[in-house]
Length: 336
Image 1 (tube, rainbow, N blue to C red):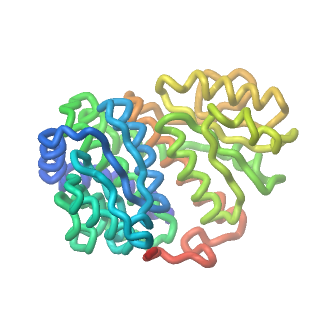
Image 2: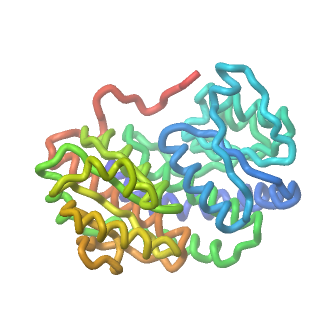
């Protein structure tokens, strides 16, 4: 896992170079389709990538994005009315039967289907109109890292090509350098906050909320540590009942329109004596931890998750666990 985290910047550069023709072609096809809406099909970390892309597409292209349940096609045998839409199917292996079934059904329903996968020759690729090879390379660690980041980058590049967003394309070109810096972020102080606890809240808002969901999963997978992700807009409702003095909270704030509100929630929780850490300079009561600003609101969250990956791998080893081989898990889960 450590080796694969270190490979992330090069993997992103490889994707942007090696798949640029496919990205441009798929983006042009999306622009020609002029879709009314977008649907995503994914599970696990790939679904967290899809959640990120939901926010990215809605914020920049103005298209509504919905996550559809793969079991609707594979188990329930129902067909959805998807004419005029784009279907983004995300799967690292490209082999999960339910993801393939939904992509096949979406294509039959006249959706333009785009597969984002680390396996260019796969059943999912065969079921799709366009295939984006994320070029992450072999990923042996059960916990996905570089394939997750590259799935998000592929989706962002696809969207940028479809909308001719030159600012986003330029930001993506600079991203590998920022991610190299993000790997080296020192979150040692945050690790200390977890020593006397067995549960954690991870907060985000907008695209950074997707990174909070991914971070919570990685803590469970690699550290046997219970973590739950929440939108910073919702944490002050029911979940607040669990917060006690010293309860650890990680607030993932990106440099975007939501940063101020995330920082305010972080400070409010710190005011209730929670042990809160935030990736923002706007906090007054919560503790700030290092972050790498990328210069674009949609690439900033990627630097945050890379810093978290570097932290969580080291934290797992600190707890005496092997982050490469979590108990009870397999690399590929072929859900029906």
